[in-house]
Image 1 (cartoon, one colour):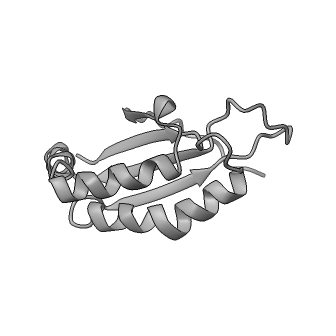
Image 2 (cartoon, helix red, strand yellow; image 1 turned 180 degrees about the vertical axis):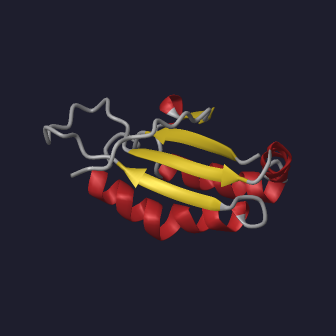
Length: 119
C-alpha cells in the first residue's frame, strides 16, 4: 500500500516568497531528488499564494508531497538520511530556506469523494 508523506514549510525570516521558490527549485529540490531516489515514487512541491493576495507572515509557503510504495520503503528512507554525510548535507541547506520551528510532516490518510461531472 502506497504511503503519502506531506510536509508544510514556511520560508526563513527575511526571505521573499519568490526567492524561496527559486532557491527551493534550483538547489533544495536537487538534494531532495538525490536522497529520495530509490525510495520514493513521487516528489511534488506545491507553492502557495494567498487567495486575497495579502501576505501576513504566518502562511505556509510550500506543501511537499512524497509518495513511497510502502511503509517499509518510507522507513528505509528515514534510516538512510541518518547517514552522517546525508544528514550534514540536509542540515547545511535547510537553514538557508526554512523556518525550522514551523516545519511539520504528516502521513496522509486519504478519503476520496466521488463527484458528479462538471458541466
